[in-house]
Image (tube, rainbow, N blue to C red; front, side):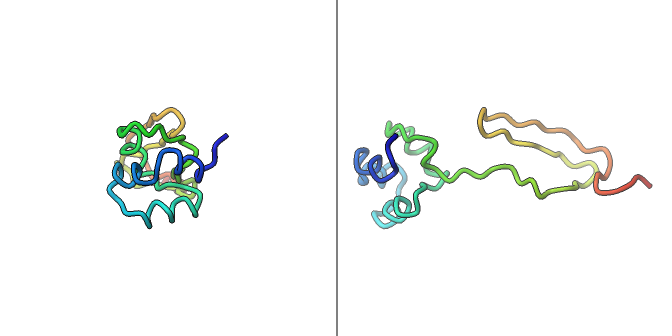
Length: 98
């Protein structure tokens, strides 16, 4: 598998800069950090650069949320297949019913 440095050099850093609208330093910093910002993915893909998804800093679902406000919309994102499951929360889930 290609690493991010090899990919960036093959795709050409200038093409990445142009697709994303950033400077040379931003691309170099991303390569040094080992991940491109997730916000760059669509622009790079639309530019035909075919970036591997593994080279991006995707955010996962925050598992630390343990309660939601009644009447709010609660959603769980499944990044792997780009789906979201949402539902309106009827009652407070943080403790016992009153």
